[in-house]
Length: 130
Figure (cartoon, one colour):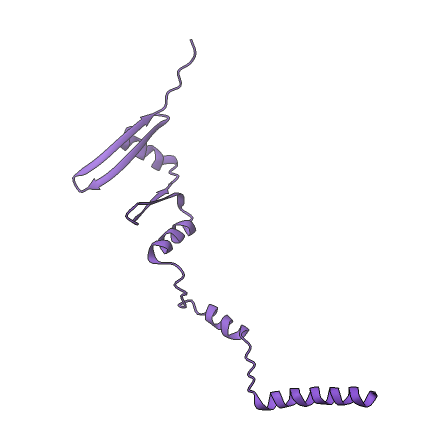
């Protein structure tokens, strides 16, 4: 009986060795190759189209306060970005004087072209109960 199991083990070993001899095996470590791809800053995957990249760039911009993305039926996309600047001290006084603002007033300036500006002035008033 022992001889039978020994023969079986021998046949399995011969089968494996014959398979290794007849077939070609190549073992290539992928980690160094993939790591090299990521080291190159010029390497791009093109996972996103140009419009999607603009949205991602806006998300990564620290100065961006609000991002509004609107997709139209035509497939076009409108990207509205809001940036906020915190102006203080003398510069704030100068800007307020130029725009003629009073306390708690808000101004929105829309630049259409060289000859056309739209100015929206919003004022906040608190009416006390009589």
